[in-house]
Image (cartoon, rainbow, N blue to C red; front, side):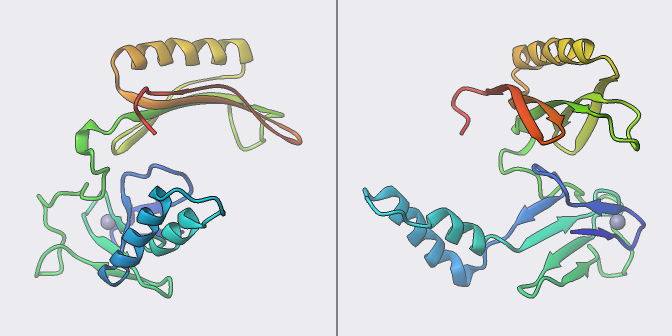
Length: 192
Ligand SMILES: [Zn+2]
């Protein structure tokens, strides 16, 4: 879902791990959700669609504008309702703009992504990119039109972030005509 805030900020909901988005669970659905978790824990032989059923219950989202703090709550029919965080219809200057970050808060471990696109899309300046996603920000760490250099920089940045224990996942993908290949992936130990 892509939409603009009243203040002009543009929401692009087109990737995972967005710091301005959360999934909500209605209290009316809470017992059903807990039931699915309990079913998943029991030994069973037949395939039970616990994950799909749980995700259906968590489908509705809430978004918060990182610029002005307004909230957008998604209804069951998919429509969005905007809430302004004060009683004068002007955004509160010191309201917390990051209420929807991970329940790990500032301790959320980030993600390192590297990719190479062959052929390079016309609208991209570079075929190779290394990007770091931390709480509330995504920064392109490196880009290049040299494959070997892109892969080398990915590993340099990966070793640095792993030593700092600041990421929970890293992956390098090569996108080619006909599909993509993951040529490197890493998960932080003890992180699902
Ligand atoms: Zn806004």
